[in-house]
Image (cartoon, one colour):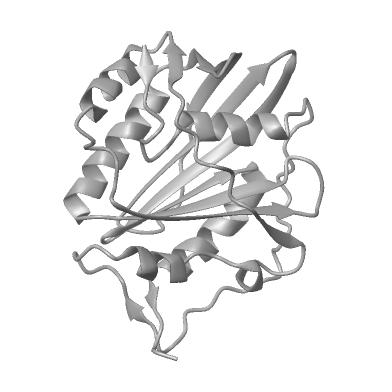
Length: 234
């Protein structure tokens, strides 16, 4: 079956993220920024209201190098990929594709930033912000995570490259109104790489952080803190 790449948690994007730095080494779980403290500014206001945020508002809430600290470099965004992704061996993802035909999983307000950490291999992390009504975010993101973790193993053809994907749900601390997390192992050409993906919904905003497990564990707290603030003008 064919899975569109416009869903919020794009399999093609995750596969590219994993395979560009593909390695047989175990991911580094060390916290590279454990000495950095995340604080909520007193002039911030909660962003948990039900009204969706605009693209401009989301863009201001993306992490930047000053939020992450020394060692992080923002990387240019890759050109948008519009090719179909063929998924083999996971009926739940086929059902998800059918539900996505009408665009119900594609949120109109989104922003994205990617970073590389200088601490070693497997050092990429990507943040995505989405905004819509609270109900639509909850239903859509929950359905996507449930589908992606319903099959322990399946195959993805991205371009002409066959990739074996193994998934595992991960328990996470409460960070917002709802949160989801998974580990995905991508194997191709005798090599493998692990990507961790966490999504946190706070009101009308969903924060998705994907990449090296150690970096995701560090960045997700900072991403949620910044994404749920409204900065004062100026």
